[in-house]
Length: 416
Image 1 (cartoon, rainbow, N blue to C red):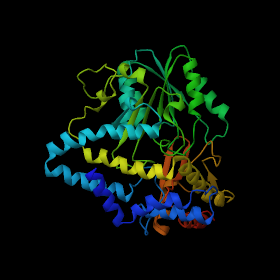
Image 2: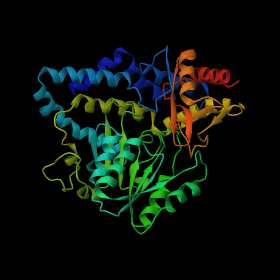
Image 3: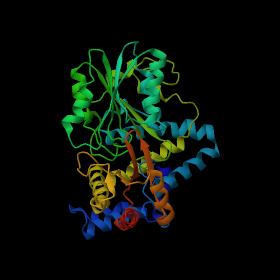
Image 4: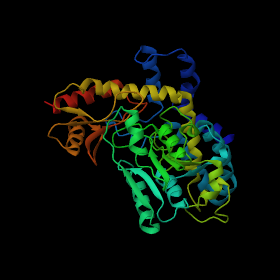
């Protein structure tokens, strides 16, 4: 309680105490986006971040910045740990991981005994991919648009264990739910053991109907692994509702936790079947903590997660999702009719949120992204993957419509 009191005092210096106490009360009845009270709400939220006034950061799809209170907490816990590292880390902060586990579980909508900490979605999903007891000839259905680190993990298992990878090739963007589900189910056979689903595809922001694909996979006798790196703390759902058996995410994306934080969820009755990525005394026990044998690591980073969670819960996931869908469409709607501009992301809420991609005729994505930064100091990223060569634009809750207006001007000037 003394540590939390210290951070709260620090937060008050920069105005965050007033934010947490007053903003939610000030606008309890706000429903529609775009009116003055709601704009005021998001301006207050911007004050919670150290957002640069000189660079417009529209690459939050890579990694999101932490709120000021989280950075203060991280600094405090680092200093505390270094006063007597083995005492404060192992005897104090290590014990605080259990309350944090319960706090994260409240957002995830699951049993605290089903989630474990790690450093990012790659580590979370690699733990599952390499821990699954698959045999030669077992089939795994996955997409060519999955994240490279996970594709490489599956390819390594294919090389080492002689499993068979069955590839789904998608035509994106798509607003045809039946097509998206059928693209996976058409690949199912009686040898399908795992169906791997990227909930939001990072290249273009396509939302896949994970729940329906998972239901079909279970009907076929397969288990389901879900990559929730870009959907957790962005889309309003509870992890078990997606229907998967295994789930991994990064907390330094939409939860805005410290960089290098992630989370794994494994359905309780499946925990005992998964081998830990790093050695454990009882590798096949049903205790989720067997995945946390990482040796010495940064406890301050883990402890600071709770402060990002505080702000997220104050905003509310549903409100965040609505706002970021609005911001995506705000800039996309203004360039959609330009003759030389092509959009690679759906503007419908069921198929796209936050992440939006565009391309300009006869311009490579990397070139367009470089020009946006050179001329307008707008930070985006050029995507070149499979059939997508486009610029990815990803605002966050601290992004203003005025910043997106500048993006629109930049796109219009380049698209002539």
